[in-house]
Every structure is written in C-alpha cells, then in structure tokens.
Image (tube, chains in turn red, purple):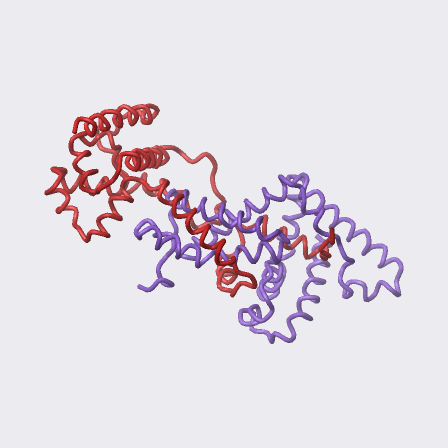
Length: 196
Length: 205
C-alpha cells in the first residue's frame, strides 16, 4: 500500500486541530464550514444519508416536537386543539414544550389528542419515551462539566432555573420510577384504543 | 428569514425533512472532504463518519443551548472530531497510512553547513514522531506536548496562528488569504516561515 507522505510537525498541528477542537476559535471553525469543499458526497450516497437521517430524527422526536410540527403543518393554534380535545391551553403549551410528564395527562384526553394529531400508537410510544428521557435528563445533574471554552451548554442548566419549573405535583414525583410509570400509562392508553 | 440565515439548532421548529436537508447542506460535504483530504480516509469511511456525526447531532442537540450558529458549528465539529479520533484509535490504522518526510527544507537551511545543528534537528524530529506514535496508541501520554504546542501557537500573531490552523484543516490558500489579509501568492512562503517559527518556539518551551 502506498503511504501518504506527511511532514511530522504539520501532522502534529492536524492532531492539535482535532484534539483541541473544543478550544478552536469559533471564527476559524465558521470559516472551515464556509469553504467550498474540494469533494462532495456522490448524489446516490447523499440520498441514502438523507433518508437515514430522516428516520433517525423521526425516531428521536419528543411528543412536544411532534405537536409543534402538527401545529405548524395544520396552521393551528393551541386553542383550536383545546376545543377539540378538552385539554387546557396551559397543559397543551406544556406538552408542546416538553415540560410535563405524559402520565400527568388523563388517558382519555391524551387519546383524543393522539387521534386529533393522526398518530399511530407505535409512533406515540416512541415519542412519549423520548419525552420522558428528555425530562429525566433535565432533572439530572451533569455527569461531567463540558469545557468552559464552549459557549453552548447543556440545556437543563438554564431550563432548570428558568422555564422548566416543576409544579407541586411534580416535586413529589419519583423520577427513578418514571420509565416504569410510563410503561403502565402506555398500557392503559393502548387499552383505550383497543376498546374501540 | 431565508434558509441561510436561519439557525440550524432550531431544527425542532421545522418540518423534519426540511430540517435534515438544511443540516446536510451546511455540514456534510465539508466534513466529508476534510476526512478524505486531510485524514486520508476512504470515501466509505468518510461517509460513515459524516452520517454518524449528523445522526448524533440530531439525537443530542436538544440537550444543549446555543448562543449562535457559530456555537452550533463548533458543536458539530467537536462531535465529528471525537468520531474521527475513535475511528483511528479503534483501528490503529493512522500509522499504516502515513510515512513521514523530513522537516521541510526551510528547517535544514543551516543544517548542511553545521553538523551540530543537523543533529539537533534530528533529535527534534524524532521527538515529534514519537509524539505522533504515542498519540494514536496512548492519547493521555501526549497531552503535555499538545499543551506546549498550544502555548507556542498562542505566542504567534493572530494571522500566523490562523494560517497554520487553517492549513492544518486543509483550507486552501486562496480562502486563507481573504481572512489574513495577505496575498495568496505569498502565503505558501509565509506558511513555511511561520511553521519554522512555531517549531523554534515549541522546542524552547
């Protein structure tokens, strides 16, 4: 195999660029992405990647994100959904922002919401699990501090202080059981659908 | 707000196929090209790394807040770099792909006439090679050298640092010249000189 010839010190700089990617000034990285790339992903492979990414995104969407998307698609206001489902605008707003555990929503009203959104049960299961995972992460402390040079930060740091406010009912919620509680909730929800 | 102005990290507020396309258009080809040109990965390996990176971005971006699009670009790039490092370390194949050439000629201008100087250069060169070997096999052992290199870089002028880092990330001289305000035709010479300057600082630290 022909080996590529590299200058050792330049290789060291390449490694630095790779290793210190967290502290590389944002302006330099910004320019990196502005440059017209020498090579492009062939069309066929680009198509494949887009399809795979789309299904990744679909599978990783929270219930709130799906609600948000439906609102946008159908050009609806929360009040329109409130009228059709019996849920209050405040609760819908919390569902939309993923600041409420799904089992806080009565099963019957959740069923109406799901029907209104036109989702199938498997899609709902996946989305509600994503919501619970997301909420659980919001309630946990970071495992390790990310480099201080980064301007982005774990969302829950801010959310916990500001918009993510646990209500009285939430404060007594046992987070360690959240996944189990969701399983039970999903079974009840599934039964409601089966009854029809 | 048009597509280019809209921030990528607000993907959740968009229709998802739309969002994926924006993400792809902004990042995929640059990362793909960087992996092939700078790191000599195959097309398939590069495709896989780009896909893994964007897939992880999609799955995790919600857990972070971003102050700007530049912030988000750093986030994407860091994920990509971590994947690239893991790729090499798991396969231990970087060393198989490359062979080292001598320090560029500029470093050896004096060496032909001065045997002591040449010996010193050879020692320095072997140190750098050892660092590179260690880096891919035992990354922790190379942290100190990287910190010294970082400090040496900090001692350069801004334009010099940009020139070296941009070249290390394979940005063409034509693009770099726009940012460092130096003529493109001169940049190759400047690059040699600045690299030599960096080596001198590095070995003095």
